Length: 383
Image (cartoon, rainbow, N blue to C red; front, side):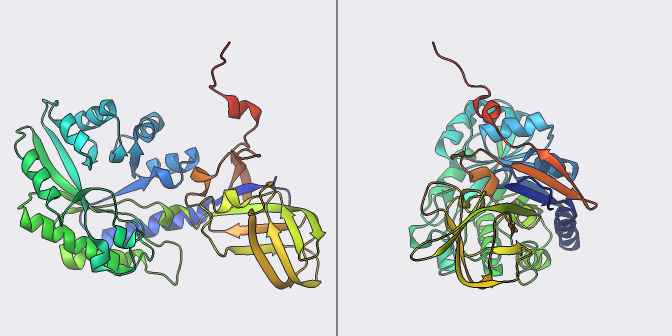
């Protein structure tokens, strides 16, 4: 690790293998038919999405660009979600038997122009806060995705689609955003799925429960516990689709940065890294990190503020209390950072860092560090 160029991400192949194997084993234990749709938006590193393809995962995509990327990589099986579909890719996906879960009224209008027999899924919007108080991401403001179950919009949509002789509803999609990722969330999802199926007498093939699971964290719910919760309510009557992102990819990724400066001010000692909070927490929500300090110094210091390289004062990662005094060229390894970091990190001041694969005690580069050429690639010159 001492010879690695920093800043960099490090993907541990062994941990990635463990996560996908664990999920597959848990699904096999509880369901006869299941599909894993890997969430491109969570981490779309080319190595990762190619790896997931070879693990027989579907591509779970939420825009026409992600759909095109999945095709380019060679995915034969695609789950197409989200409001950012284009009409062209929407029609193409349906004609090629992709799993397409609709959630906008314009998609219903697009269906009217399709003459071929097609099957679609419906994304359900439901009041998660009612079932799981203080656990939903949106609280009492409610989620914005899907057709609302409680206010009758879903019923209207189902009735309208049933007038289309060439369109069949073959699935429902109930992914929700949460603060807790608790088992209660999946109990609510399964219960609402059951209610919708029974109320509208739907003859469907699949229930897509989305993602949002914990993974690679022993103190949190396991894949087995999540899937047992779902099976207890829905039984083994449908193909269960899961759309994992963070649960597979967060724990195998670390981020390594080097100390480039140490300075004392009136108020603090600041330790400056060649990495940035932009690469670790681009939404600036985290209050702590899992980390390792790599230093030969044994002296300790009361307080050190660890900061990033950018010119923004808020680029501060953590405050170390009564810890070893970091020195120039020491390194800090941040653990379990593979979820959303690489997709959301901005090209601010310093471009995307390189990525190493760690496998069989060796490191190799699987993504080069961006430079000027990569930044301007594809740009059109205007005269």
